Each structure stands twice: as structure tokens, then as C-alpha cells.
Picture: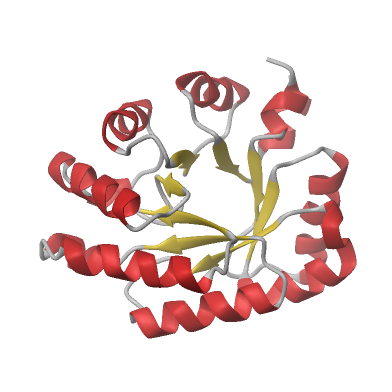
Length: 216
């Protein structure tokens, strides 16, 4: 597969706790130069990145990251601030405690509230599959679809496990036609990226996409 096609589906990602502006600026430049779908960066850098790169680059950021147990009000505030500072896309973490309690109505309501705060921007919902049973994965697919989110996303990359082909197939069976899929977490090789795209994934979250091709 042509790497330009692959990169056009990649959210070029830098979310480590010690991320600096110099590092964020570097991945933003790479995002422009390599034609990435977006960069996914910490919230504190959104305005600085948007001010510098403007419409040349789609800026994604994370909400309730990485554990998801912030209150809904906090997630909504984070989202409104990110949108106000120029974020084009929002990647939110669901409340996994609500999932474990079986309170799926609360999960749906929170996703819907965050979607409303996005004011038309793309919303990707991180469900952290590594913590979920098969039945819970199916239930959160319904939550994501019912709440009107744009994407379901496998993982933060900070939790238990990451993307797997099996979870992508499960999503495809249960997510419904209006929600796209983002594979994220532990995706480090060109074979993995191309494999997920072949499965029908629309976005891939990865920090090493460039190196995976330049090392060949």
C-alpha cells in the first residue's frame, strides 16, 4: 500500500506526560509534510499549534484522558475550551466505571453531552477495549452509535492492551453504519497499519508511522 494513502488515515500522535512544545511542533510539521489526517496532541498545546499551522493541519486533542473518570461537566468544559482554542477533532475517554456498573444510559448521555460541546467537530469515543468483556464492548458500541458520535476508538495506548483485529471485527458487526472506526494502541509497523486499513478502519492512532516506513 502506498505510504501516502496510509498517512492520510493516520492521526500522528504525541500524548506522553512530558511532551514539550518543541516535540509537539515537530509532529505538527511532520503532519503537514507527510499529509497526515490529523495530529493528536495534549490540550495545552492546541491553541499554539492552531495559531502556527492554521488550516494546513487538523488538530485533534484528548478529553478525560487517559482514565475517563472525570465528571461529565469537566469533560464538557474541556471540550468547549479545546474547540474555542481551535481543535478540529475531539478524542474522549468514556467513564469505564459506568460501563462496569452496567449504567449504559449514563455512558450514552455523557457521549451525547460531549458531542453537543463539540459544536460540529468530529468526536472520537475511546472505549478502552483492553478493560472490557465482549458483552461490554457490544454495549458500548450501542452507546457510541446512539449518542451520535463520529468514531469509536479502541484504546488510549495507556491502558490494558491496545488495538486488535478481533476488536475491529466486533466493532464492524455492532457499531452501525454511521460510526467510523479508529484503531489505536500498540500500532507500530506498516504491516499492522495496512492490515487495519484493509479491515475497513478509517483512522489509525500512531506515534511511529513515519519510522515504520522509513526503516524499510
